[in-house]
Length: 185
DNA sequence: AGAGCGATTAGT
DNA sequence: CTAATCGCTCTG
Image (cartoon, rainbow, N blue to C red; front, side):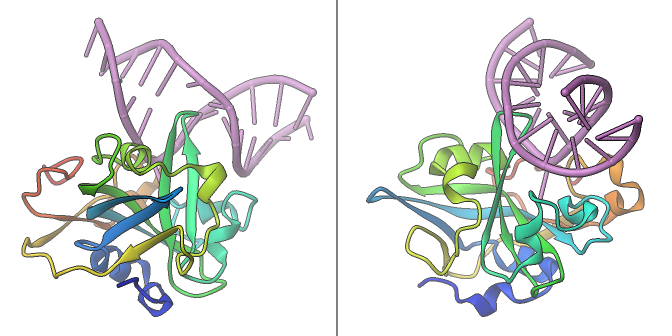
């Protein structure tokens, strides 16, 4: 069952924990591609120096300032696409980066790492940025609560963010072999 | 208009 | 550890 907008209308940290065990689904021209999320990071507010929202509602980050339950997909290093879900409420820019998952069906590639996950599911900035996750093409589905324990650690590759880099806002399922960096940190 | 760099990845 | 590679943001 597809997750409702109320699922996303919470603080990013809560959503980042709640997405673990949920299925990310892309109906790719009739082909269903899906993976079970095992790792996610929270980006919270304009004051979060690690967030793309730190420069304000620029063209790239504008979607984060809007209502929850939309996809924020961007290109990094000119090669990898990364997908977030927008959380919280309109005017409070926050999002959850989907970093790793375990394949369920139709996956084209490794699902470990945010760029790999998008590639595996056929998700691209040009096609999917700004899509409503209540739509038919791209959404999260409910699933059984994960048996694994949830562990928190600092977010990956945000060393430029000063004290914000230390916040333990990366969540993953302990021991899951698809997590991008199994050792905390 | 141009410099500088990144929420990454694959390969050495 | 490093190159790849281009969109985004800032500066002037």
